[in-house]
Image 1: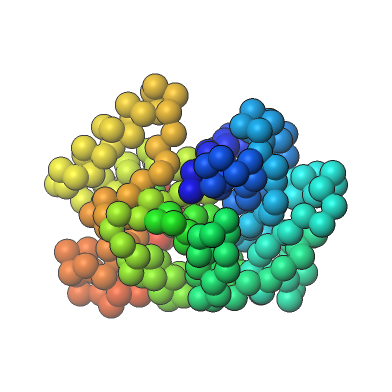
Image 2: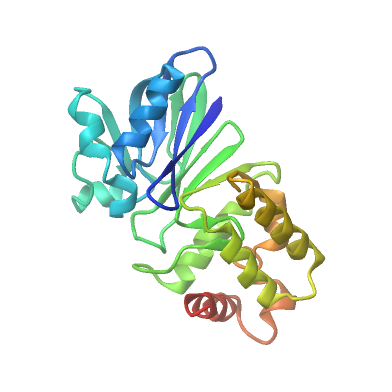
Length: 249
């Protein structure tokens, strides 16, 4: 499977997933239609489905326009979002640990509530598409769930293979690494990652995808229960402290 990164708005990402040579693809999240349509045309691809990680407007605003000229286009999102009618045009609901086929590759769904109650991630062919739950060196704000819920969702990503590529919903990496450095100023891993990400952005490059193995070493929100970060707190207290600190960073 091949992933084409499509920048949208000022810092959002959509992702076209295609089997090389097939001429078909799905898109993970649809922030806005024009850049997605341009990418489809540039790569000669036919859009077969839209997979949505959650219902926020900056992830679904392009759905109606993309579907308008494609009758029967599958629009897939979480069962929570479908039950609560939160995504206009959603045609299919998926549940936790559901598996389905995409061009001969198994797709695994993870329910990862916290940022929203209907947040899901998609795991396919060694990649994970995390929406706004897990960012490179960070995580999303806890809008609808609880801190315990969000920390449990993030812990699920740690179970994936270390070589898994992480495709997240926004280009927040520099700010996230600056926060991570404020948490662990002595970390050479974070210092090197910040220098590398700074160089990438100055060159006009994306920082996505990242590797889960590196995230396990540099992302404080995947290490919230590490004794070094936890101190005398419980895991949930540690996560809460980190998330609240990032909210005002």
